[in-house]
Image 1 (cartoon, rainbow, N blue to C red):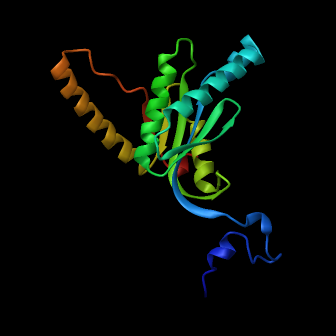
Image 2: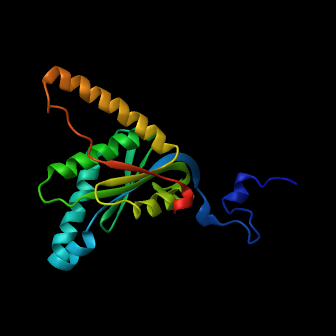
Image 3: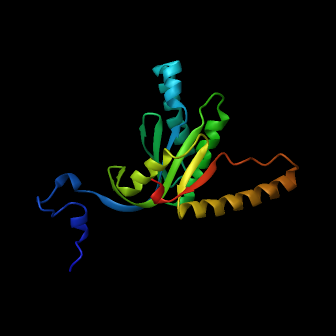
Length: 195
């Protein structure tokens, strides 16, 4: 038995012939995150569409300011942003910076995030596929101020977080108690089975 080539997996050469809408799809390894505003629906109901829209636009601006050089803001979707990064480290740096920007703004809603690393199809700056779906679905599992990460990204993040704590303790020892900045996220691991 032969394994279908990449052109078959991308829908080209399928039973119905070539599909030009799939031309230009590129398979990439990428970290994908969705970040949204916890409590946005309630805010919209209580304060109206204009105030809610203003908050969603500010989230997008915070996301742009937080981008690591290897990360991109793919798009905004209502009160959410979709982010991608070439590496896990770039995504974690972006998410941490984004949480910091939001926390520094008085009255800004808490964020929640879902982050996954895997393969996706990219065309014209947008992403498609299973990795994107997983990141979107696990965002719904996150509570306010929480990020849900899939394995092995979670193991990598927890290792990086421990390194960050060690650095904070070194800075605190140098500067005195209370001068180290706390992490802005509570992280939880999720397996693909959870979604």
